[in-house]
Image (cartoon, rainbow, N blue to C red):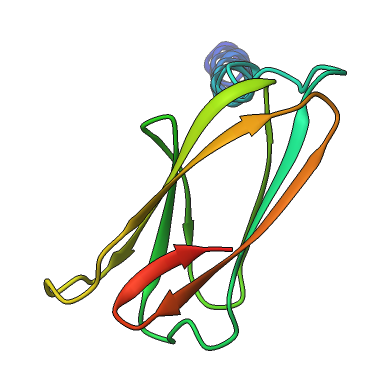
Length: 133
C-alpha cells in the first residue's frame, strides 16, 4: 500500500507541474502578442485616416505592397484594402507590385497630412505605371 500512495502523490505532482507549465507557456505567448500590438501606438486624437484600395482591374496574380515613410505596412492581395492612421505632417507613400518581372514601375506619393482628415486612394494602372489616385 505504501508504494501506491507514493505513486498517486508523484502522479498528482506531475499533473500539477504539467498544468503549471502549460499555463505559464500560454502566459508567455500572450505577453509576446500584446507586446507586439503595444508597439503600434493607439491613434491619437490628431491622427488622420488613410485608406488605400486596389482598383477592381488591378490584376488577380499581383500583390500590392504599401510602404509609408520607408516601412512596409501592408501586402494587399485581390479584394483587400489598407486602413491605417497617420500623424499630421509630411509622409511618403510608396507602392510596389510583385511579382515584378521588370515591366511594372512602382509609384511614390508625398502627402501633407492634416489632423483629423481622411485620405482615400485607389491603386490603379496607367499603362505600365502604377498610380495612386
